[in-house]
Length: 485
Image (cartoon, rainbow, N blue to C red; front, side, top):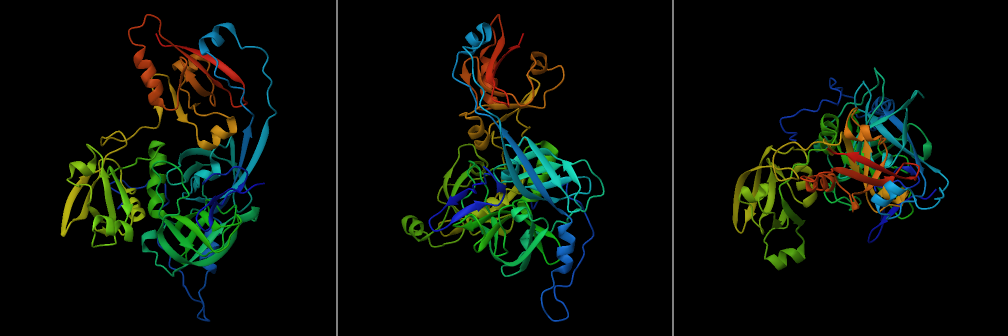
């Protein structure tokens, strides 16, 4: 099995899930999380009688709440070609198409139980592209898991198993972590279940450029606790036995641990988990600015007299920042009273909010310090909650293909069909879950807005139908017609 690495200037950054093709690679607003189990605080002694740090209670608490996540990815080389869907639908497929043999790829990672009724958080790259997800508890019980939602921007995913009275791990405040503080990493490296290692927090708000999504948020906790492939999605725990991070990556030239590991802080995780459970997608709040870290070169070029904060390189038109009076050349220094020294810290603070939330932003303009209240917006430029990607007209949820899925299916894009509503147009046309739409009316589609645009352009036509061409999960090319009258 090949372990993927991301090669930087000096070292690589590797995802921690074992197996094949595992990609890594709010203030919480007025809303409260409804997923994470609330428990009374428990204080464990940090030292034993010999004066040494004592991890035994924290380890005992956390190992039962950390699970083994096992995935199966079935792939078959797609036979899809750029045929005209009209001709293919009415006159059949051209010639005999041979099916490539089906292959199974196995993956392994970790997860953390957040609530006694079966909600589990893990990394997105652990389950991305999986056809089958199984969870094994520390007591060896096994459950099939449902993927509630995923967020490639933070590399987090929420799973659900049907169980009760599970040992949930209490969630701590990652903001309270101090550099030099002892922490435990709990997970299943190399399929060795319930493994605990210890180290200290080496740095906070670390950006390692491992995520590839357009709106990625990286503000990792860096530690020297030993983690390896299979630790992905496992727990980073403080000496009080509280979850403070989700292990996600390692700095390595070999793919195995060689000094530093990185975890997603619970300050980010709590918001993402709450959104995935309530909405099925993350409610991303945006300032609407392009920001960059200040270094010596930028300070000299822009004649800046400060090295901390986030430099505003560009302000989007009609954005939340523009409406609040923020301009290019400003330096953001505080978000809601929290000092921000870098881009990653600024993104961390904003990621805790939802569209419509108001935040106080302090910024430097020349020699003057200014303060403004910003009403954050969503990706569409308004303050409403974003619905899970779907096209209600068709009665189905449609999800853009991930990079991994496109590689597995040998496709350059498309939309995967899921959660078909009974009696809806897709249900009536016989379209199954898992079908991947590649073209609609001979137009390539990669987002729900593509289909909405096609439907809108059909208005006024006497015959209204969508002709879909795409592939089934097993790679077979299939065509459907959807009556839109």
